[in-house]
Image 1: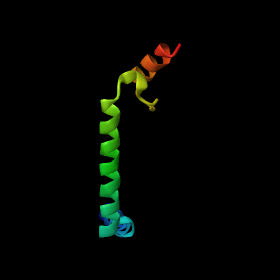
Image 2: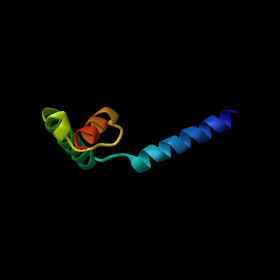
Image 3: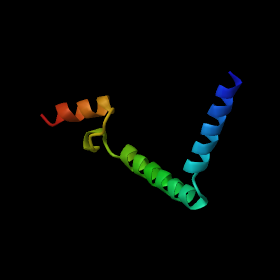
Image 4: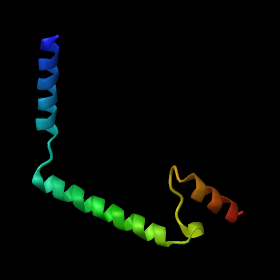
Amino acid sequence: MNSRWICLGLCLAAMILACGASTAQAATLRERWQQGAAYRASIRQMPLVERPNRPIHVYGNTVRFFSSR
């Protein structure tokens, strides 16, 4: 049982080291997140009927569908 936990810990540590984000990658991810936040804010300011269709946004997509008919 203990060897299983040791193996799991070593695998987890190897994955973290292999997939760890560097400072430059973290800055890039932060910039992309901020761009996404700005995009969401601009969409929220649009009237519901003029917003683009987006996956999983069932209510807005349905309203746009029936208003365009």
